[in-house]
Length: 445
Image (cartoon, rainbow, N blue to C red; front, side):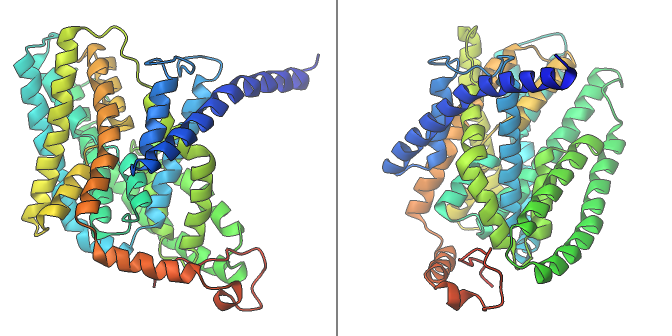
């Protein structure tokens, strides 16, 4: 058997192994998603519960540590969150984003400071000590400071409020506080490790600055290039394909060369393309991929990562306290900052609740703290319940808050988009446009 035949055989075996878990994820996630919608809950809640049900916590039908398919599912989930953040960037109102930028910065700082202080105090209160107690408490505070906005993004998309002023602030503040959290963690590891914790803090800051300079310069050139492409091939699949390619490039560059989360690169790519006339068309094509394939795998993976075996009572009490403190600290910190910036109480609550979710960034911070020898693996048992509870509660609470206090301005925009969807093909396009087009324009001028 030659080399090509061996590679072909191995590829078939790997594909065969992943088909069953993927089929289970799609079936159960979709079924529970529909049940969630029947119960007037966001569909993402059902998809997360599907992961918990299929994972080690309940039925143990799918285990992400399985070498036969675990890496493949985790990779698909990672692509899902990248595409989700790219879609969020495409749906951003850039003028509104620039307008709320200073407010988002203040909300982000409050969303880091209050959880960090709360987590620091909570760890000291429980009396855990692994040899560097103060540094351990600082790492716990940093874990609580991290925000995973992907689940909030999906919830806001389902509710139709992603493009609102509140949605823009949540997106911007979440990106900023993740960057701040990574910088703080780097500083803590360096001090605790006697200066051997990686890059100098000033180098980290320089990398973050250089990334956004690169994003601005390259983004300007890309925007001009895509404007030209729009004229040559308007509303064809060529544009979304190239846009998706640059999203992956930006994500890779951000993570590999600048030490910034790949989702930040994806969101930056979405911001670059959000002013294009084809932005809604690109977003629609990306959302189809998300809805059909990558989205269910990502949200189910949040539940699949849950494994509480080995948890004792002291850790259980700490996990419960940390979960409550982590969510309350975000609501108080981010919601309080928004209130100080002139937002009314309902919108301040929406911002605070929208920032409650923890996910991959919290796990990354935990992993880095464990690898540096500052905290023990016990912390993993406390972080997982935090991720699950915050991921489930955030979309539910956002649904309740928007049911009580709807955003009439965004509702008006959605009504206009709905009217546009009812127009016929000939009313939307001239005769000289190609047939390979999206039939509905949803871009609101």
